[in-house]
Length: 541
Image (tube, rainbow, N blue to C red; front, top):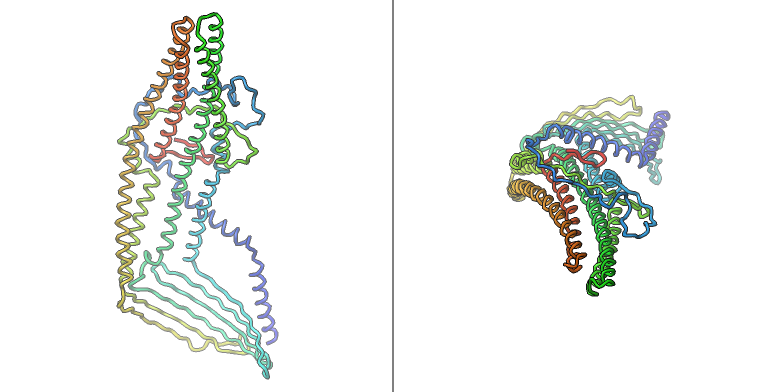
């Protein structure tokens, strides 16, 4: 008796110590391991063969590449700020390429981290739901001391364990065992144990795998949707980084153009002053030349200040600290001609688009929800089976004997008297399904229109690139003619100023069109579902 009582007490204390010793970090590491395994498995299952599975439009003869496409580094031989004679900036800047900007953005961008964490939380949620459909184990140790005046003190100790499992067809089975010891304090005591098994199975309402496992099915699908959405976010993020990067390149080139333009105005002012001294021009021409020089210098200062602000904002976007000053390399987006037919590309997008796939499967979820809501209109008829095996009390744990075993079976039928709420829920589910179907059809129709529009925009931008290059050629000729005629005394320097300003506008418009074309091309690849993002954020086609 004393040995068994001592053993029971020690087991209780040991179990209590083990439970208290489980640190929060242990549970956190286990949760991380489960979530990471689920994410790896889900990503591989959802996107593992995407490159092989997508459909590509048939290639056609590519458009002829415009002459000198992508040349943006005139006047920018290194990564420094262009000057017009100013001293080099004191701040040491780290010049980064587009690929480096993408890598930094993935590591440091706050929005990117939040989306990663959101995907991770989705995996954690699935892990919890999955766990709910595995055998649910529970065990309890308890002890109690009681003292009643005039009576000996009493001590109780007990142990119980159970397992519960949801069955594939909607039922539930559970089993449990328990054992306890009571010491009455007068030298006596007894053990009391028991075991039981319960099975409950719906036969009408709630019966079947689709009904009982809906939370698990939906959680699995939600993770797939989250993985696809995150992949789309990665594509949009890479395009966003490229757009911001090339916008800085564009501003940098505009500064170079302004600097070159300022040099021309300085020369024009000195030339006007020289001509005025020899009587070949008027004082008005000199004043006009000075005003153009000052205006150009002011524009250059403002452009540099705006560029500094844009660099700071880009640094914050990448998640870099304030002391990590950056600059962009003068990289021009290389011209890549478009090689696909618009009509066929629309059909390709209807097969490849990840968001359209999500919309399609979410419509299936809505239809499944409608079937589940319809099931709730049926009456409930449940079958229950039970088995109990009590073990009679005895002063020795090993001396307990199984008493009278009990087997029970029964049916429980719910009389469907009040189904108002269930009927309303079913009607609401049907309306929701019809709304989801209309939303899907609208999304699909808009997708077709957007892709057709994107093709037209690309074609327009190719034509615009050609026009801008022709304008630059024409404006360069015009500027040379105006300057020559001014030197000959046929023109005033107003014509020279206007010609130089027109040339500046044309040069700035060219880089703007090159950037817009490349971003539009990347967005169209994304829309067709054939833009793939590597781990470092760089895309492949």
